[in-house]
Structures are given as structure tokens and as C-alpha cells.
Amino acid sequence: MTEHLRIDTASRIIAAPPEAIYRAFVDRDALLAWLPPEGMTGEMLEFEPRPGGAFRMALHYSVPGPGKTTEDTDMVESEFAELVPGHRVVQLVRFRSDDPAFAGTMRMVWDLEPADGGTRVIILSEDVPPGINKEDHDTGLRSSLENLARYVEGQ
Image (cartoon, rainbow, N blue to C red; front, side):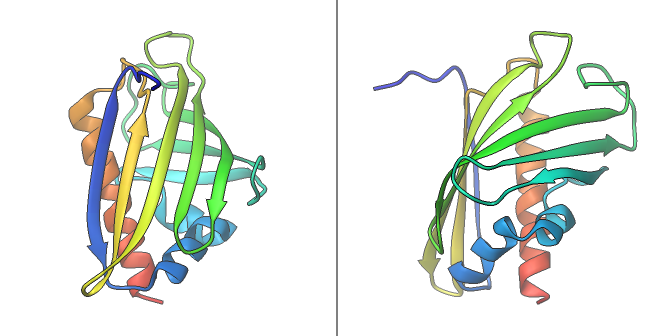
């Protein structure tokens, strides 16, 4: 069994079928609309929704701070490691930073499970870089789930 440095999780039930939620991951405009957490805006630089395909996004922060690629921007390079329509999305997220505490590759598993009232979306973030504050990351995961729910429930 692989040992991970740090694992953060979040989940919620979203009032939409798994297929609609899955589509929100593999459609460029949809992903850009919901993925950036509150306080950030996204700019999609590359998008290839297939196993082994990449997506690169610039996350622009409304409040500058340390540990980012630049003072107010994080460059996030991701690879779609696994895509199972209607069930699972696995991304390898690479963080670039001059500070090693904020750099590294995080594996994000998004599982979609049918549930009463819609779909339970479970996020498992493995190997979270140690410089990323756990409370901030948990808030960001919950914010992304809220954004995803708002996006797919409004479709």
C-alpha cells in the first residue's frame, strides 16, 4: 500500500445525476465556470479531456499572498489520470512554486456515487503539499463542491 504525505477529503450530495456532474469535468467552459474556489478566478490555458490528457489553468487570487507561482497567481498543471464516465475523475495536479513547501504533485480523486436526492461527490486529495494550509484547503474543497453544485443544479 502506498503511503501518502497528507490526505484531505470533502463530500456533499448534489441534486443532479452522476452523468451531468461528470460532464462538468470534461467540458472546458464548465470546468472553468465552477472549479476555481471563492476568491479566485480561472484562466484555462490547455484542456485535453482524455486519460493522459492535460489541463493547465491559471488561478488568479483577489488577495495576494505567499507560496503562489507569482504574487497573485497560481499556475496549476493537471493531468487526467483516469476518466470513468458517470463514476470517477482522477487528476494529477502539479503545483509550481519557488517554495518547495508549496510545490509538488497532488492526486485528486473525485468519486460520483448515486444517492438519495442526487449524487454524492467525494473528493480525496492525496499528497497535498505541506505549505498548503489544511484549513484553507478544506475551505477550498468545500467551495469547489458548492460551485459544482450551483453549476450543475442550475443547468
